[in-house]
Image 1: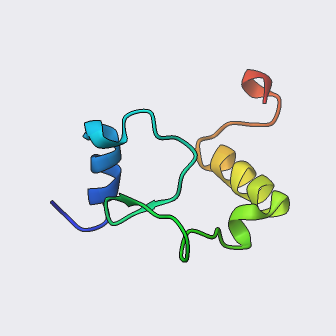
Image 2: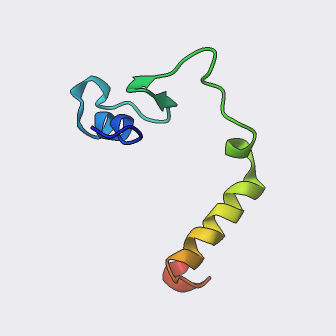
Length: 68
């Protein structure tokens, strides 16, 4: 399997992580302790809004469409 998609496929298909949600995962494992901290970008409301707006623009969705 190509590197970069392994963890995504593992999380989508493995019964070992069934029901796991809201956790940071890397290299086909749920990461806890050191290394599990989220970056400042992941915790930034401003960055979340910027990503949301950029994603909408890339998909051709304008504000107000679909109640967004």
